[in-house]
Amino acid sequence: MFISTFVTDEHGAVTVDWVVLTAAATGLVLATMTLVAGGTEEAVNDINDAMNAPSVLVRLRTGFGYAPHDVAGFETLLRGVAALDGTDRAELAAFSNAMNGMIGDGSDPDAVGLANDLDVVVNIAYDNAGETRPTGTGYNAADLSRISSGLGYTVPAIDTF
Image (cartoon, rainbow, N blue to C red; front, side, top):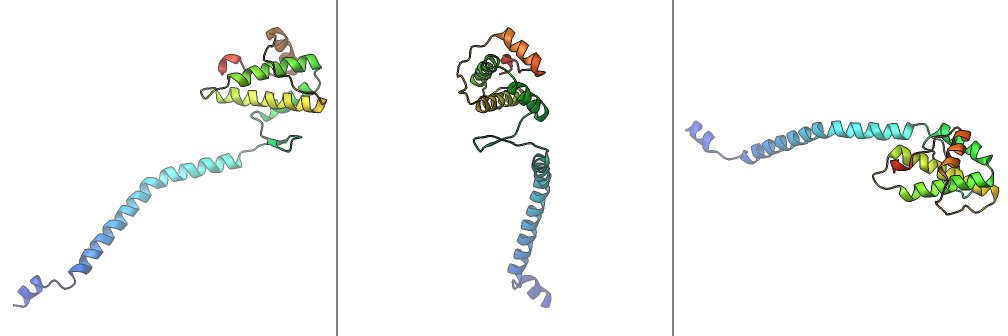
């Protein structure tokens, strides 16, 4: 009789159900954490690397800052363009304007970074000279080649945009 009463007694059954459900939920949480942890760790490391990467911020006269794509090339270009005469500076401005008009979503990121560096340097040169930057896009390829080799700077090819 005791055994049949024990087997048919339902007191405590709810407690057993909750223990099983809680264990199942805990197992699901642990399994999810295991799956997500690898991707989360990679994302955190990528963010950490980006935040700790050395960067240079150029303060512009307008009060804004600019982080050059190629720091060493930017400094070389900045010094060289500052020494150009107005005609050569206008040639670089026209080339930069042409590149800016061709940049699209599928553009090579390195070429876009170099084009942005050139654009900012040209803006700084015109700002320092107290002149208005021309908006035209017509440039002479031979003059551009002469100017860029004199600067020790390789201009991005137009076809990379």
